[in-house]
Image 1 (cartoon, rainbow, N blue to C red):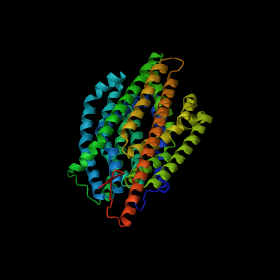
Image 2: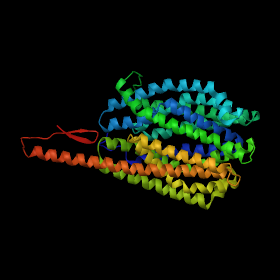
Image 3: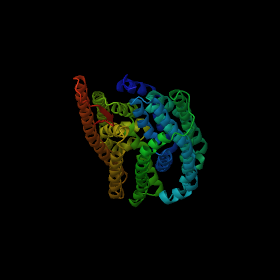
Length: 478
């Protein structure tokens, strides 16, 4: 696979962006309509429930949804397609068992989580619905990793289209049906519609995975493939859980701190809904263009590093950072210059302009940081990414505790805490990627020189021949 270079960044990203444009457009329109139909309070309850889902989904996936991308791409880069297929089947086998198990735990714990974390029993139906969502979402995330690892990037966008086409009408129908029952029921309706969408996405990914695995999805055990998945996946799961728990704590802190600043429970929920449901998503709106770059570059770098192609790695990263940086700066300019117009056009809420403007400080860092973290994870450097995300989360927690309870700051303090989180995490990821690539490319260059010397030694007819045996980018003499 590496020889033919079937993962060109620009072509792959353009194809993925083109096919993903439909899903992104549907998703953007859906988000705008839901904000207007459901209102800030129902949106706030929905956003409170979602961090619980991220914790449960991280545990259910076992980290395999990320690990399988790297292992499949690395196996292909080393010319081992059967090993890549074994990794894919083992990951899927685990997901089909862990998803239902996590769902049962969520159903049982829903009343405790709603009351203990958020002191709001209206969240019980929404949290219970998260259990239903976990079953198709866990299998779907692993299948998406398999497809991404095999280079089927455009198929991810088509799965996204299927998800959006099914989710949007389902959510709107459920909102209309359950609106008389109040904000809690509407929050559950949004999650119920997501279940329908995930089932559609899962079906699309299943079809593509069958093609990539040559029609063979038998879930037979492959102990060596399972061991490799666990070695990489469990640290990913632990790191993801660790940071997801901190995110959950942050989500529960903001409404409480707002009430300490003088807001009622309803007012705090509405403010939290404005921040998490209206303002925060704006920083990710250009993901239509950046997301495809991340999805293409992550397996591509893993494959190229596996085949020690130093020149291609450097060119690929330059292109990725140029695209992400340019998009980030352009979007930052719009957030600074016309925040009120953005709020009015999207949500009919120009009053959120003071909350939108601070996002400009985060936008360029967010997109470049995503490229950096994707490459690091694709190269197996999970530890640095985990630490960086944790430092960013702790920065956010400290600022929430410091600023949000002050009436002069309130929800604006939570916005700046989020911006600081993004900036700190991105800067650390960029620094770690620079260090890792310098060290890895130096090893590849050294190995290349050693191999050239060995070849010259042999070609000169020396009696003492040196044979280079390559393993993990190092050359050992034997």
